[in-house]
Length: 448
Image (cartoon, rainbow, N blue to C red; front, side):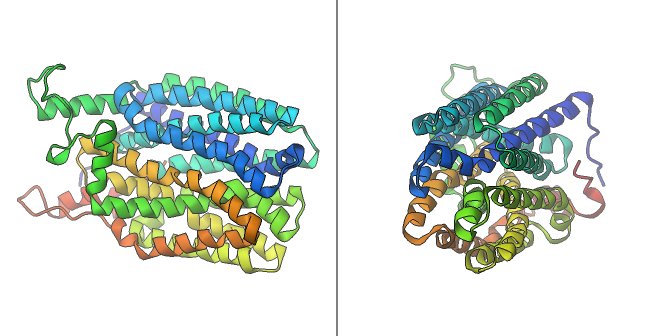
């Protein structure tokens, strides 16, 4: 049995850089989420109007997500991460100013910049993480997203403490911006240049030997002659029915995660009558559950496979959401948030890994970018739609949408099963099939 390659110093630094900045983005996101009640009160807006403010995050996120894959293939992951980090820091600074001056338009604009930076950077990070997985021959994405969740725990703890002592929101977010700047500078220096761009060039060279940069045949086409670069290539990958189902799963699971990120503190404050500090504590419990699930989910994936694990995860999350919605006890609802977080934890990273599984290396970046886009689409429809719906039925009842999506995802998780390669000779069969599924037993190295 072939052992995975040893990790050299450059690859170790590459992986550590991805882990560090995902941690930093988690801290920044949780810092904003934990202070949403304070920002809402400072702006003196209703829940529905707060949904409009949050729409800035949705617009920015989707703008970043939609262009990130193409930018990575044109300029490489490191350049896109650098741009995303710059926008993220600028957004935090503008949010801090808008909150301090009590200007809704300022917070909206800051959230748009913040969301654009997150969208650009996180799609690029998924592509980089998938590249590290291929380099090491071991899972990286669950731990990478676990670092984001760990960052949300740190950010939620800090937010809860600062909320309790009534520390100004503006100064809090400005401090976070400085910390994210430091992490971003180190990360950009450690990530190798041109990951996605190099794959596109290698793809073109492999399929069109001898073709020059100006040749019409040197276009970088994927399977079946489809271009995997540009908008047309990114849309072409959706012809795969399995990828469409994976995209629906990741959209539902990301919506379940994103709805908690956007609304959980306010859900507890407005829906269950808790204090703002208790709302921040509830979000922290959700973040701890997410972190635990992502760092501890590896053995479950090895033993049962991604389809069974994501199905069970969706059902566990649905139970948690149902208890939050229908329980009359704030204490029980707060405890149920743990189920919500555990259930939502593995959905995004596992589906991202499944998207590139069984595909040729030259197609992997386009597929990963496409499914990442579907997941981040939840940020576009989530905050404003739930906010508008909450104005009519209440925030608790609006969360029924999340419950329905989780139930639908549980019904289609068969799409996460690894594609079975055709038996064409000695190179296929059991040995080859391992390339299209999570490693099991002794060929599964540790996650970290």
